[in-house]
Image (cartoon, rainbow, N blue to C red; front, side, top):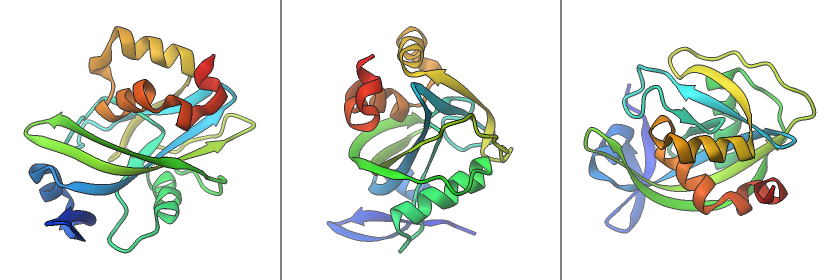
Length: 176
């Protein structure tokens, strides 16, 4: 079954098969979620079977809305599908647009609705092995340092979020 995502073709938003959108470098809708516990961010290592950026570390969760799906509904759905996380209150932090080569001739050109969820305790995750290898909590400042030292271990979009959009996404913790 092919997944149809919202992408712009000739200036109009229309359903496009997900892989084709990446092969053609089409601008398309996406969502990214960051689950935060104080100054710590829950990050995931992408499954090795992913068709792009396998094994790289990314934000808590990210995906593309299905055609006609609301971004917040998509974010909630995907947190459950990838990590078994349900019921978190999500806060929309804004939109980010980026274009990045993700290897093998694929381009992510995304207009991303970014959401955060603040948690008071470390929450359990139940990783879907088709999506996620593992997760870990990392302090914001340590994540920035790790990305600076070994950028090849992290997805292009996570590097972009932390280098260019940290204030919008993380607010006060980005300044620490």
